[in-house]
Image (cartoon, rainbow, N blue to C red; front, side):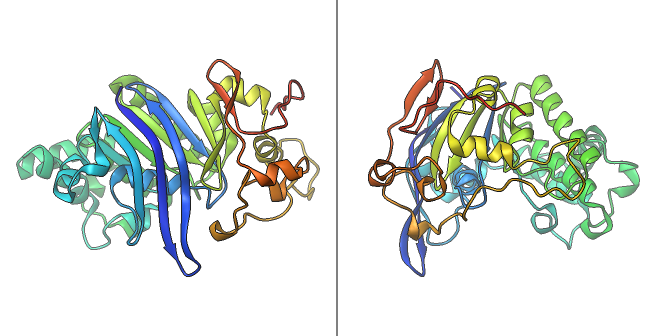
Length: 325
């Protein structure tokens, strides 16, 4: 198994005191497999990715186990983690403009991991950097080797980020909202490119998004997170067909639909995401759920199997009523 998370908890220090931002996350991911994490902002998706990379914010603490090829990343010193980042695991960050160095041309930034991890000469690294930029579809890549991040469009910067992440052919690629703020055409191109890279290289992909459609159409399995807890998980096709959890159905209903009346308001999930210090002791979605009862708020629901590999945390298990997109 390439990646295995066992009972991952992430604790943050806040102005309201310590809070638990991720609460007992378990999943596995092997080479050639794709897994999606979906949920609203604050659900714990990006923190999970940062924990994998060993880049949690100051004051954060992770417990449990993160096994990459059998090696527990949480027990490694920073020097050992630095050897793995960019080599065995890599990440495409949500906002490339803040992830790229504004003081260095993109060619140098794509070449850097090759020199650090592979010991490539400057000429070898620059030659490989050009090939990578061409592979990810950056227009006129040779001319843009000397360009700076601010001289590129959002879609072009995202392609540069992907080239950097793929430079050393990592076993695991984490893509955190890789299509945010991109137009529909560029979004489709980026997602198609990710799929091609997984198929060609056999790497594993962890795709993080708030868009249920993006996840459902681009990964084999998915986890629906809310309040740091996985509320539903399973194969994408089965989960998308059934939509057993009220939160999963709410995410689907909130998506824009083709053919809708002009000016028609989207269906929003009632209420707002509570702060981490305000989470109820039971189901974190209970304050916003139309089916919630006192039992929902009193105790955290246990995960139960609806079908092979399809798990749900809800005491109101629906045997029908699947939502379709």
